[in-house]
Structures are given as structure tokens and as C-alpha cells.
Image (cartoon, rainbow, N blue to C red):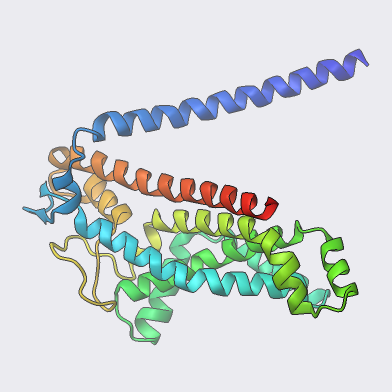
Length: 284
């Protein structure tokens, strides 16, 4: 008994130690970015075009491009991913083929993002002739987000007790009526939360848009979906590693990093609030 208590105390101690180390690293990174980037943030920085080779001006094209490409990603990934998850969870026959499909989706979640970028170049830019554009980048990010959306949505559907389905079917409801009225209301908060977290990850990706549409420097907004665009993660990458005056633009790079972190934080916060609101509505 005493031995078990000691093992448990050691285990909790190790877990708390891991938590402290992670929080310290994350806190140090955030402090570094916020302390060096807050002096750059202003209305002019957020609303003006870059000038003089991105050594002056703002990051409006990068903010607008990130928002636009994330919207296209959501249009592709959300309905397609949730529909696929509903089919796999509620309709698909259990067997080797279903297990193989599910395992393939899980594996696709771990494929490096640069591979999706190269696949996007071949499929959308070269074969479908969409050129390097907002649309090609959005569709590439959509493909990358799909496995996340499907996995998160399927796990949320599995969390709904089987008795909810059995009770509805016993009363004479059809399969779809059961899913629509008894399953989805309880699963949607988890489905949306996983989806928004996947979109937040897509908004911060650089590799998939590197080859499919992101531009180094564009002092104007894209006029159509077939135009190239600037994006915050690629803009930050260029300012930090490739710019001809790295030391001069370093403060702007910190400001861009702070804006990008703020954008991802807002998306995650929106997911938390949305989940809370939907749970509250469901309980009422």
C-alpha cells in the first residue's frame, strides 16, 4: 500500500514537472514575442500596404490573404470532413475496408505539411491549371485539414451514447432523423471545436502555401481567386530568414509574429466560446 502511494506521488511529481517545463518554454516564447512586437503594432501597421521592399509600411495584404485562404480552406474542409465523419461513424459497415479507410485517414493526419504542398502543386497548379493562386493554396490547405476534421468529428460522434440512437429508432424514427435530432445536437460542439482548431493550424502553415500561391511581396490586395497573395506565416518566414535587411526588418517580423499568434489565439478562443454556448443551449 505504501509502495503504491510512493509510486503515485512520484508519477504526479513527474507530470507536474513536465507541465512546469512546458509552461516555462511557452511563456518565455510569448514574452519574447510580445515584448519585442507590441511597439510595432499600430493601426497603420495593420491597415497599410508594405513599402520600400517591406522595410516600411504595414501588413494588410498578409492579413487579408491569410483570412481569404483560411475561408477557402473552411469551405472545403468543414462540410466534406463532417459529412465523411457522419458516414464513417453512422452508416459505414464495420469491416476491413472501413478499418483501412479509417487507418489511412489517421495516417494522413501525420503527413508533413510540405508533402501536401508538393501534392497541391501537382494537382491544382499543374493538372487543374489553377496556377499559383489563392484558390490553389486554399484547396491545398483544405486537403491538409480534412483528416483532422474527419478524425475530430468522428470522435465527437462516438462520444454520443448508443442509447440515444436506440431510443429514437425504437420509436420509429428513420436513421437520418435519429442522427439529425438525437446525435448531431450532442456531437456538434466537439465537431466544431476540432474543426476550428484544425483551421487555426492551417492559418499558421507556411509549407503548403509556399509553392501554391503565396508571394514574397505584393503591395496590393488580390483582386480574384486566381491571383497570388501574401500570407502572415510566409511573410514572417521571409522577414526572418530571407530578407536582404534582416536586422532592419526584425521589429516588423516580431510585430507580424504577434499578429499571427493573436489570430490563432482568437480562433482557439472562438472554438472554446462556441463549445460553451452550444453546450449551454443543449442543457437548456
